[in-house]
Length: 182
Image (cartoon, rainbow, N blue to C red; front, side, top):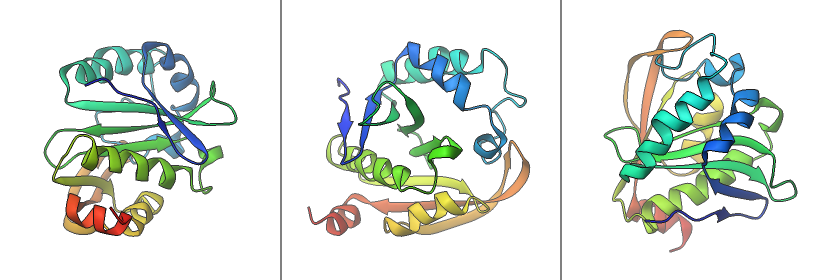
């Protein structure tokens, strides 16, 4: 399946390409972003961390058809990356995202999450979306709550910042589409 650019009122979600690693490397290695990422994310973040991740993890998984990655950009400045959102066809971890701190709190991630979740259910035709998160990640939690997801499990997990309480949220395609008026 060929990925397309997803467009919202304010955003362009462009499929990830190798050249995006340069901007990711400038934005991503900040504690405000990585502290709630899974412990496999190296910290301190290496100088080639983004290049390694994009070229050796994200793009190969996209080629296998098990992952879909988009860079998040404002329509008014389409060359400037401000975050990333991905969908993964793996058990209990179907959606992940990050946004540079200077763009947080403005509703961008909520907007990106809606269009990506809609892609998951209505383009990829998946029946269920599950999203794990650190319980302390209140911004991510609000996106789950506001989109109608329900908490289905709590447990301890390893994150970059240590062992934390973790939550697993889910929503079905039927529930999502009912909320979206589809």
